[in-house]
Image 1 (cartoon, protein in one colour):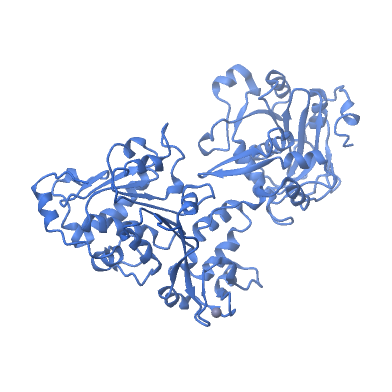
Image 2: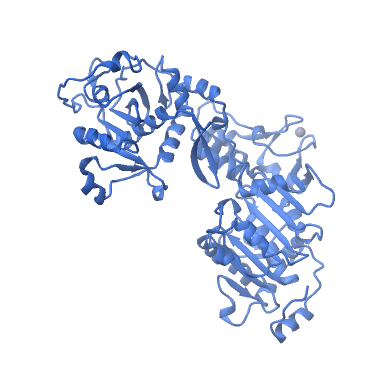
Length: 601
Ligand SMILES: [Zn+2]
């Protein structure tokens, strides 16, 4: 493959280029200096500190290997893997290089904090810096020896396009968008740039997100998959480090006790392995392949944070205990600390299993409000011939109890359930529904009339088609307010509230913030509330029905009742005997819902 020579200086550098007879890890040890900024351990690069990185880096020198995949935890040195390969390529085998970051902001940060300091602190690279400042920019560095680094962003198809690239580095790929603008996947787009080079190298690095994320897919489809094995200091048995083997004491129930008592138990001899054993174990460690295909071209490495010389077993125990009851935090622990994809067992539960799990959250009786509730809210999902509703009681920590669920056939009946009833509290008092959120996506005009009549105790809402820039709900626009009046709908990010409920459902009963249903709740309710599953893909959450025709109206009603609790700001509520009572005018209403509807009285 002939290369274009820019000028005489380039030619000169090529001729006097020493032969690349070092591997990347040897190059790093000889030439790489870590500047004091942004690093726990500045100074000359030492392979012995993170011995597991050596084989990954040296895969870059293996002529047979075209693609290197590194699925890893944070805090193991994965940024340095790319930097050392980059430095080596510039110094020893100059050609066109592209490094892709998820966004321009991350690219700018990495350039400022790592790439630029690396070039300036390593003599071999510094000597090759271009004289002209225009050749040394964020998006392009053209070295004197013919090496060029292009920085690109996965969310910008333009930056990924057009140049032929021999070395492609894809960093934090699980943060890439699914598509780059209207075009194909940013990874495919970038890979196309390398197609003319027989000796191309593609390096893909990330902490994983889900099994369908970029890095886990690349990992699973690699020809060879390596795991790191280290020997037990007591019996010498080689094993992969797994979080299941971390042990701790938790008598006082404090995280600090767990952190201070943690150790790793050898899977063979049961011997206690402590943090001070780790450096020696790492030095004797070996990468062993799980599966191997002959004539392999892609190799994948998986590394848990348990191997990190900068993290203790105690920190793992503590982080786990701090995260275990909150799905978002637990996912972060699984992804960033263990380098495992998030396999959500709850949403992967079959519906029958999900229902059984829900039944462990039964507390109290239908229609009876616990004495420490600070508010009652309702949610209503409106269909062509029916309206599904739930009424829920809330404590200020968002602990909540289902008070009533059911289905009614007309707005008069709905009015009596929501606004003409007070619900008995356990301490002999009673409470009224303070806010009902009613879906206005369907039978819109009737919903508006109903809401206007009961304003401010009722609000119309509408599911959002976007993620509302991260907000849970947004106020009606002044335009709709003008047209519709007080019934103008609030726009709600339903995925956000479904996540919120889902998180509450997973808090064990009796703990703060737990989510309850009552004894004798209908089969229909159980089915509808478990009718959807949470799908997390490329960092975006969506809730989808298990089956196309599943009924999910009571699940939606739960979402709207939760929106209402959020609007009332229940965390700021205090239990107050003189609680605001809602005066409802007595009016005649059809009573067919008592016998005909849910039959709940
Ligand atoms: Zn052992």
